[in-house]
Image 1: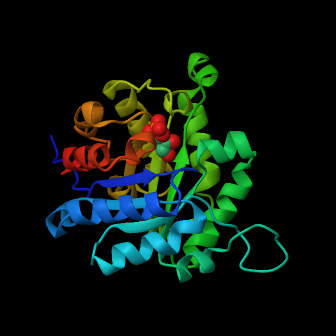
Image 2 (image 1 turned 45 degrees about the horizontal axis):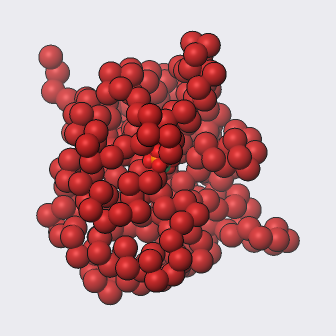
Length: 260
Ligand code: 13P
């Protein structure tokens, strides 16, 4: 058996539309205190606060000398101009953001973003020098209809259109089955592993085997300290994208510890 390629685990805390200023800053401070350099050397950790607190969270982490990265939950595809309410990638970079999340199911299915927009946002983030997490995942009815792989590889193909091999080193993929998000229902480690294998094969098909071996694929959907180890032990699960459990320092730290 060939050795499992080494991929540094990547754990993201997607705070979604939660935590006001004081709580966001306090959580960032608590995480910075807990995750010493040995931890962030072993695991890439990115937190995704709401837009208004990106700068505050970034400065808390900076003051503490933490290697935890700040990510944005969204960003617009155009560099500037008359786009009321939107925030450009370079503005995000300006306030300390290093990574942008695109294609999250809440943006696809609640806000109504298309694959085309997801792809445009991904390119805008890369062009601005930011890293990207591209999320894909099937809904319950799609899984029940046997379309899990079709949906995931389709979202992947559209999302990664026009990306170069070199740019792939700045992209993490997040597999987030929609039915597992915020529901307490987690994919079994086996089901998640199967979906990750198909996603990695699709990356090999679109790019090459070396790119596929290098790309990190996170699992997201009700990941908690209690189930994190079993999921992260799977050979193709290289991290997690955490919602609810990322809002409490103890829970999030438990998951990061499981990834070490
Ligand atoms: P939960 O961990 O709350 O299920 O959310 C997952 C998610 O959507 C992370 O982006």
